[in-house]
Image 1 (cartoon, helix red, strand yellow):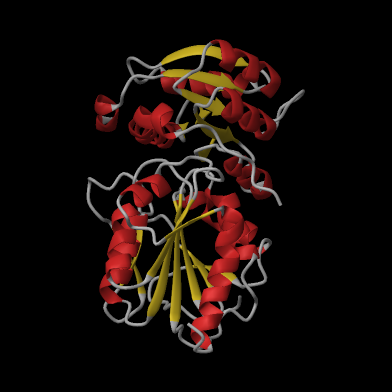
Image 2 (cartoon, rainbow, N blue to C red):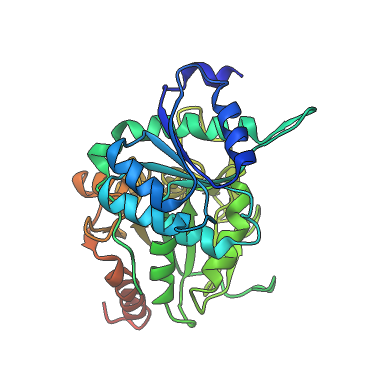
Length: 354
């Protein structure tokens, strides 16, 4: 495929206890000249040791393995010898809680294990496209990422149209961070929340289900033609880029070839600044790269409140760092304080105390 021509060659490691999966991954990677498998580990414990000795550009990590699973291995690797980790597992749909726990520990993304057969190479192009994107993002990995700190601790009926919109953008480490923020928001929140998390569309439904377990607010997938509604959390799909239209409803756009991330935080934030006519707050959480920084700055210029996560509690201090450096964030806060601050500010504005 044409997309392989521009892929940066990478040193790649595989962590998997299935010989079939390992062979499928090896054969997939062999399609790109320059990619080199530097080592293979059958469990997380061996992967941690090998990573310290020979850190790869990209690590393809299974979740369920003997001795040490992929979640704990991801956590330890990101603390001691951080590198880009892509979860590659066959059990995504039935294990969404584990998947998002691993993403919260610092894994960059998740994809299904490719299946190689005599008549089809199911999932191989998807994996190679994912690696192509990660090859771009990992160029600045060592500069931007110091490894994560573990973060502790609806039906279809219409509700009132929101007078306040909270727009939240995140990438690497985002699910745990978003869950932490949402857990602090009250059921009676007089605002709508829209979440833009970099993720493949096949895993968005799992993210919606998982976030619903973290909050008292109803969580639903943002669909074409819907509008932000008070007391609801909407999660962007990634079949395209979610944006607000001039009439205040959701739509999806293809964006441009220059937009690396999907869904794009910047495109949504910019659309809010352009089309939202009421109050809004922008929040930019952990993630690699700069997506969301320019959009957050535009929201700030519009007169709205903007918040970026601090370095100490970010899994990867890339996106919020870009926002801080550009002056886009009016506040820089710990992940533990963002939710309470949002709840307090919106309540104060509702009752005219601010």
